[in-house]
Length: 165
Image (cartoon, rainbow, N blue to C red; front, side):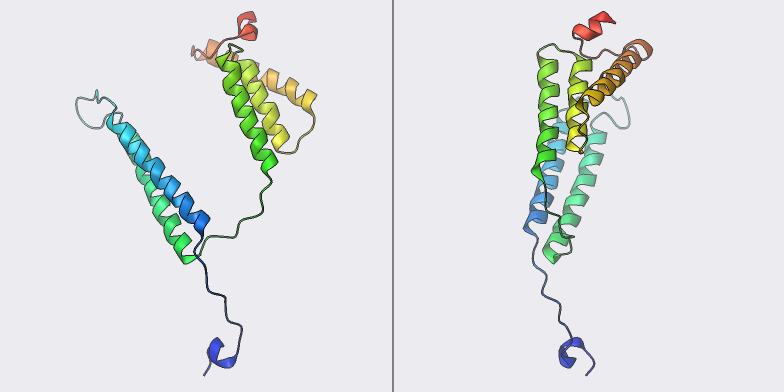
């Protein structure tokens, strides 16, 4: 006999169901359902062909396929092992998103809001030059604001800095 089990060779441990993978598959499937449900409420203004509800359904189909593939791999135990996670970067990015929402909500404007998000995200990636990052963020946010406002004539949330421009 030449098989590993018959010759006493190393036997691979049985693969276990990956519970996190199943949860991720369920979340992907749930998001797909929400997209389809929400797309049903869009009013179709197209006289013929596809209306605005077509694209969310296409994206939902892609998410559903990802969910199915993830579910199958999770059941088979084929998902790669995950590294241990450091929660600090995730928390910093979430704080940045919360600041973005709060600054815009309280009338601080696009430039300050995106600058706060830039600085917290760069800190999440390990950069500790907060003053330099703040200057970079203000310059970049101002240039982006001017490009959207003047070149594309699209309005972004205004605050005290945007009123000076």
